[in-house]
Amino acid sequence: MTVGNESAAQWRAIDDVRILAASTRRPFAELGTATIKAFQRDGVVVLRQAFPSWVEPLRSGLERNLNNPDKYAFPCESIQGTETGRFFDSYCNWQLIPEYLLFVLTSDAASIAAQLMASDTAQFFHDHAFSKEQGTEKATPWHHDLPYYCLDGTQTVSIYVALDRTPTQTGVRFVKGSHQNGKTYRPRNFGAGDEYTQDDPTLLPIPEIDPHGADIFVEALEPGDAVCFDFRTLHGTTAEPIASRRRAFSTRWLGDDVRYLERQGETSPPLDGLGLQSGEVMRHDWFPLLWPPSND
Ligand SMILES: O=C(O)CCC(=O)C(=O)O
Image (tube, rainbow, N blue to C red; front, side):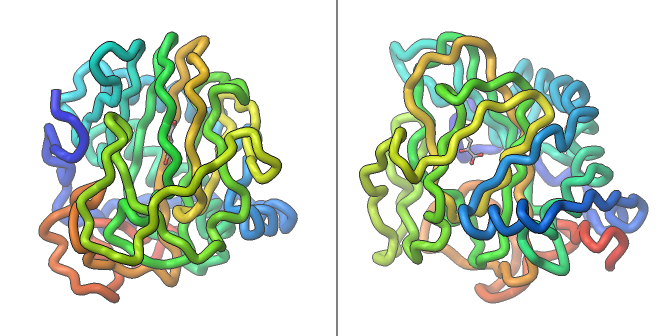
């Protein structure tokens, strides 16, 4: 089993994904103004029962991803040594797992992303599947996602669809408003918690966070609910034991102001060979523009 940033399988199965974007249509799921305002203010919002019909297909896709990790891209096991349980994640598999592909291309996610980001466009970045098995006591370390990525910008969102009932005790916790504190923190891996090697003096160590503080956002989730959060919003979990399996499927979206950023060191996903210079738009043949529904 590969750990972390090594791909087991080639993630790019399709040369130019613009053809998929052009030959599919995405529905519009209108969000209320209060929801959009809450996302902009807190950097996180829950959409209740946004994706109920996707739960079974995504579970099936994730099951194959979990059972044959080395057939897919970037599988990662974060349980170390004598720690109990299983904490698995894998990303960039949307071109390899048909259920993920259909979700990306035909679900409400693109329209939801554009509205939350207050962006005219929504460009798809990548998928990310997570599973914590019963008995796992490993915390997801506090982090925010932007410094893991070869990206910069303020219009971003991850749409994290719960595939199991998740009580607040073991759910992902978010620091409300942290997307607007102007700080960027050093990425670290989920296994040993080591910081990534990045030569960037502006990156700060993760601050002390009280997981039960007044600024924490966490809600119990049912399968089909989605937690949507900005790439800059700090999040993590406690080490509360997982009482029953908790799986989630996340998609990461880019808005109008997002640009490629050449980071000085490791990124995750480690996307080599993009052929871009800092400040350029992420290429549409690899990262499709999915909102408006037929652009390109
Ligand atoms: O499910 C988890 O515990 C981690 C999720 C996460 O860190 C993410 O989606 O960025």
